[in-house]
Length: 554
Image (cartoon, rainbow, N blue to C red; front, side, top):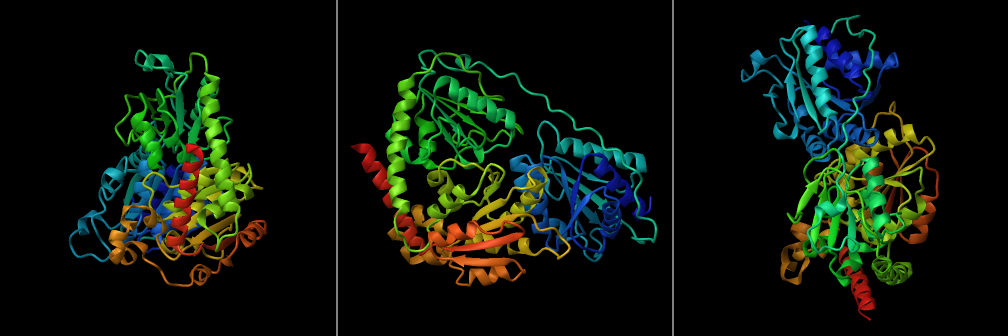
């Protein structure tokens, strides 16, 4: 097969396997794939997205796939272009996201021969790809079968990223040779569910199932969320939901769970759902619980027991049996209400700048049921979890590996997919300044690319804020802290983020942020919220926790 024929077969099978969106990054060796995809776009067979930065392009594809639940491909040329997909492939692997890396390559015969822009791309992503295939030398039927099998694995019982390497020989392009055949999209393959166990069968003798706590971590399976809600309601358990657990509005959910768990008695049983571990206080709760049951929900990645405290791991939320103890839930809710009074008073007072917790609370108020909230790692996700209270918007984050790279692009991709399902909704993204700077290229989209309804709120405290609240923020490390942890960027954040041609506004008060959030949600906007100093913000957070502790001790 010549190169245009290989490209046609690869693209035909991607579309037949349910790929609706493809991100293309420019390159020479990938020209047959790019031209074939351009033809498919003209015919309405695929939605094409073009980005100049492969790393950002891969995270854009990741965001689309995370929200849509469908496989999304990213196409690159050979060499280091393919290497730049690796961070997103890692996040996809640890989050169970069907990301499809399609990397053009030089023929195998010229590897290690000094050929230009040539590296060994075989098994390039190692353990971070479910599988990889090299289509060189395959006939048309075998090529279709190989690509189909790879996508099946990406969407299977244990979904995740796959790698399709496409060696291509010259001539790469030929006029009139890049139109694909008609494609019939195969039906989605339903995933088999697992029979849920009965809760009492998982508990040792003497445990009291009435005195339990439900901790909801990061996952993206709707039926599991419904089952978790039923468990908590039936047994009268308090719910502590991380933002991306999307159960913060459950009637039993605590507004400030991470702040109050230390004041409560050890539960007989803790059931955790999904990936947990955002807060040290919740980790302590899991350690002191009589029984810890971990639920490994779809995509069942096996990464739901980070403290090795689980006595058992199950594949579905247990079915509740037994009667609730109303006094158990009432005690937790009373403590939470006292904490809420302290928190509300603390963050409602006049403060310098816009502290991150205040921005998180305002963003929670501004977003509604048709909106999407994307949260960056480090301080932003913890600000939301500890201080924002119930979230009406669906919430997602790159919690697989919690890196700061690619969050801007992930949010853009998520916004595109969210707009498909909720045309009137807005996507909001809350992230720190270093996270925004790291992926500034995620804002660099060609003028021909669609602009979703997307509002970035960037917390500007000139560096890495979360480190001020960790061990290295202690006075003993003050001599080195600012240089190797604080890492102030020292630049005009608004100017940096406006450079790609995006509308940027800076705010200095909570009132200004509230007004900015109520503005036009069409297109892409950035709001830079100046927070004040990192040290002052860290001290405010410590003071709030101390005030909560004091209120609960009386």
